[in-house]
Image 1 (cartoon, one colour):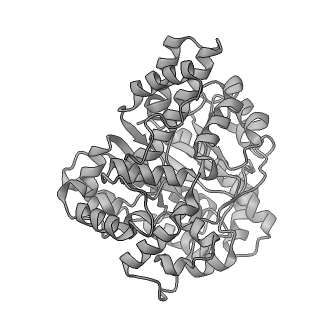
Image 2 (tube, one colour; image 1 turned 45 degrees about the vertical axis):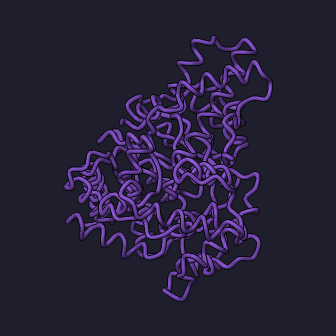
Length: 468
């Protein structure tokens, strides 16, 4: 028996389902553009086999292990590394058995659908994961991983990925991207400039990070001008390795547009570690506007992921580090917070700022009206908790009437779990086709237009927005 229903996520009403199925069939095999994510470029640089099923499906995927943690399973028991190098479970079969014992916890979540898609369509499995099937499925996947057709580059090509963007910090040497470029392999894996560690005064080691930024670029990062020039130099370095975008993971969408003297004075204060939390937030806001101006200079697309209380658990952060499933949605003000940046550069059509949020309440009230007015703004797809059928449906219903389809940017998967990429894009395509079929059957969209929009949402908008 297949693990996935061929008509999953399509409307229940038959005339809508029939049209949605036709729309989906028209885009099911379209190329995948993955313009924002967190896959490891080392996979494609070395093209070594994935170590084992646990390292592929459990250890890197906070969507999976956070649910088990919520039921009392320690992260260490699932092989999630500790920041101090302390002991964690290292036997992959043991990790896999614990994962299988908790697989039922994912029922009804998008993770369950992504996993079933991966198990069936990548590895040919036909039985649900459970304690009874755990060892057999581990052995089957382990055997597959030893074959050449399951190496990272082969899977990249099999998945139909046209372009995949990873995300690296401003201080990264991009060695794996250099290795990919020098290998002669034709797969397009590009980087993205993520400068949080040298922009956020509350990031651990901020002053040392800024000093390292200066050492890498030869700029005087103790001065405001030298600091900005160092960013320009690193952005240029990232562009040499294919980057078309920057990414900013700020707690809020606050922006500032200070004069040079005030900005320099604030920079001096944050560099000395003498700023208040309010001043740290003001500095982050100033740097968003500076980054937008730099994007006008070099053409890089700017992404802002706001509205997340990152690393909410102090215990998890101190023990296992960042990005371990504890980024929690919080209320976000975009209308007021973005106004300084928008007053400065928002009417410039040469700039693209893509906005993401974890605060769904802002879609209709703030984000769609903003993206439907300012030439510089585009609305990013649902992210984190809302990267799901229901999240995508609500997003389309709330935003389309205000900003249309063409002030959005299609879909990106934002994943660390490589095999989930085709699964996530499949969910997005099905959800969008279901929505388009509803518009047609209720007389709000012509059928021919729906087929065109389906292609746009699947790959054309992402290609245009991210300048791919």
